[in-house]
Length: 317
Ligand code: ASP
Image (cartoon, rainbow, N blue to C red; front, side):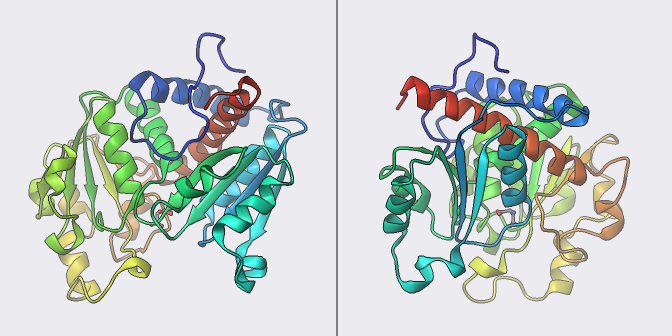
């Protein structure tokens, strides 16, 4: 399926940080091919025939796990979902022991989600298979940023020169971090719009503009990307109340008015309607890309699986 001119030179996909623009474009180009294939009657291919993909999720997931499962199956692989709570981890087996056990079964790809930033990288150093980061703590979620980029590129035709506002709980968001790396690498301008308590220290150092007011931050943007309040990662109270948060930082039509007239709305899911986003805005068929993002997720994950398994036979490191 891949064009002979493009090879992905990495053994694992642990993050967007460090990927070159042509590597991101190559991944998106192959994803485009899979979007069309997924829309056709002939969705199955054999790129991963005989291979095994294990989804090892230590944190909850709906979209990411399901779409990796679908992606692997559409490419002809055997896909196994490991229920961590029901596994040996619950009996005290360490992360590394679990990885080594799976590794001994000669699997080809391990997709890992873990609550600790850096856990997926650590695991990748211990196994022979390709490892894909399905989200590690508040660090990175590379396939989410790739699917977001694919969604934007297909709608706007390009990424460079666009202004993208990432709004809400940036501090705890791996989605924000991966998107910042990707959008900066591809020549887009990134704004972060959030209360001070939900921004990392010295956020400006990430090559972004920072706003604490939605109306100022959304002015003339092309894309508004909303983030969930990630209560599970919060320590203490970081917002006064949900009502007040929605009033100042929730996306509704009144705040959206200052964005470009053709500005599009995104959200990685799961959404908290009425907290960070108004339901009418989220369901706006003209402007909301939220369902399209989910569709793009399957295609992006197929592209990642194909490129990384090609590397296995080439022996890239
Ligand atoms: N699903 C995304 C993630 O796993 C975003 C979120 O949970 O809010 O990071």
